[in-house]
Length: 426
Image (tube, rainbow, N blue to C red; front, side, top):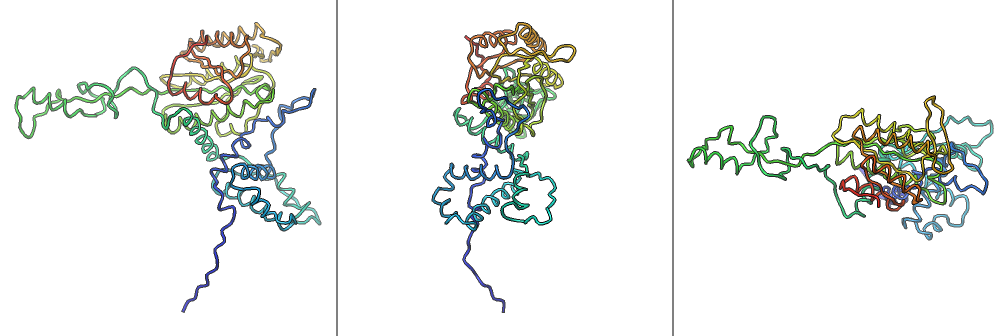
């Protein structure tokens, strides 16, 4: 006879943590834009290549802070876990954090990259000064595509909730076409229409033509009527993000909220507007397109704002796509202060509004207008000279301008994207 021995089930502490809630709390840490390194002493200089700490130790500390902040891990629980604070109790806490990191990796939200480790002749495997401790400093973590998509989904839900909306449809236009939703009156069927038959109108035509009520009903090709639905257009969007040094200066991180909006738009387009496209362009001293998958790790820098080069690249990307609508969503917080010269050199002037830079930037705006591209500007500053510049951009491109803050940036962009309302700068 087979015997079974049952013991009391003791679940691991890491298994009781809500992983998605934890990842949501880690969003600001995972999407850091270099803001932490911007708090330099007076007279200090910013290194444009400086990145925030993406080590395993930093991730563990961020997880611990997130657990305490979210209430999943109270100070009493932390005290109980640490016990007397000896090595054994500290090891328990370290194991909990390691288990949570492993769960994030197993669920596909994060991945780790570690350089090869060469142990010394007498270097211990564990404990202080061990191979494991050194590896924790050297191992780098990165968000996976699943992690990026999840953060975009959570940001989108938060933004739509603040707008009082739970779902989004497609882009509305004044035109009608045959489709699934019957939003307009019926029309005679024509070859190529979706056979979304209006049964009542079709039968009425057949009865009026034959004058007989009998089964089977004599239907002719000319009797067929189909419902009309609102024509849904496709849109190509380029999101231009200003990543000049000013985006993390003056005690506020403006770049991380902009990245969150980009991730939310990506999720919205992928799930609700599958015919649309979204590309991301970073502009600073120059400009470049980056894949959405690398957006989470994007940092601020170099220093200046080459708006004209960003518009030029965005226009080239949009003209390569055959869509009904093309638009640029530009998020910036400062004046254009750089320009790419015909010989490839970068002309820079950070003092005031340089007329040469402004004129070339407005010329690029006019080229976008001639190409049928709308530019909607979201300005994270209210300087009087900037207001006049943005008004001029809106007048030339027949776009819209919004003067907003990091707290309302996402709501303004989503309202603009979903509602297509016309707004003028006064």
